[in-house]
Length: 533
Image (cartoon, rainbow, N blue to C red; front, top):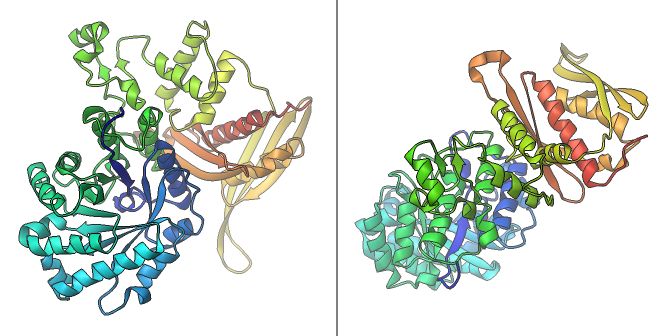
């Protein structure tokens, strides 16, 4: 994967992806996704639109520290009748804590005259003025040419005038957008090729939507025609039918077409975990047949396929699944999953002999638990604890004897309807039993508070532990209120470390305790705490 021409990757999951129906990123979600993209090796991470909503404002107020990616703010060109220096939208971009800014502007004459109600010349001036202003105040300025392909088909001279104005004003990238997703690959390749004769490819990008199921194909066609930046989202998130899926684009660019990106071999092997991390953050099931990273992407059932795969995997597998962090699934084989489990061990620093007699027991335990609803791809802390307990040992820092939680809904003295939760825990610390009671704004918060009252005097380091996210998924919706639930808890500490744990039960409080217990135990184990006497 070396020696090819460089392609730059721009991720817009945190803005375009947030427009997906049913998707609602919180600040913690945005930070976690941004960090994952940075670790992967994405060149640009678009954080959102400063000033557009409270979530984006809070995110840009304290953006995550990125080591490799350029943090990018999104906005639009100046408004008609204003100078770039006095436009509030551009001011928000200039003041945002972001290295780069990407603005969208009209390039379809129909939109300019009918929607904006300005002359074509004024629209070109708006683009040039805005890019020049941002290029002078940011490390990089980029221009998203909205509805470019429709505009080019209707009035190629005007569409070209818009993108040339952006390029000449200092845009690092001029990005051609198939905004309604209606253009087909042969059209994209032809039009991008014509634009590339006027704007150099090393300044040309592509941004495709998936309304004809061609966003990935269109993006690859644009690269063939000369574009050198590709914009997209994780798992193809986006409004309507979604955006170009970076999870599919990246391996296609690198493994199929021989291009270089900012992603190395280790990063490429993180594609599957990153794809699943996003689904866990969104509290939804991964698409099993997703290209490259789906659980069924390299799954083979009995018969001729399995026989052929065992002789030569290339018969039915277009790449080695390990290259993208996935694994082969032989449905009839007891060995399915072993390589993936061993890979997880390596990631957490466990050097396990593949012939360890306890390994088959762990494999069966993982399979049994995942059948019950546990999801260890998104809960690394719980997986590490399970592995260490099966293959070795984990100190028993505390032992829960019992807990009780109840909720009270009532009117207070001021006539306000309130709901309070109260938890009582009995915890054994060595040979002594301790009891504590705490209130909270919910049962999990109350349970966490009661546990802390007992544990922090013995383990002061837990004072730095905080819960940053809590998600519940119903695994058996047909069972109604008796359904099995899965709880995912994300925790963090003052050192900036984040970890996730999982619990499963027909009782959501019990599932929550299981996840909370793993979170606390993982923190103590990682800190090297000694078990209480």
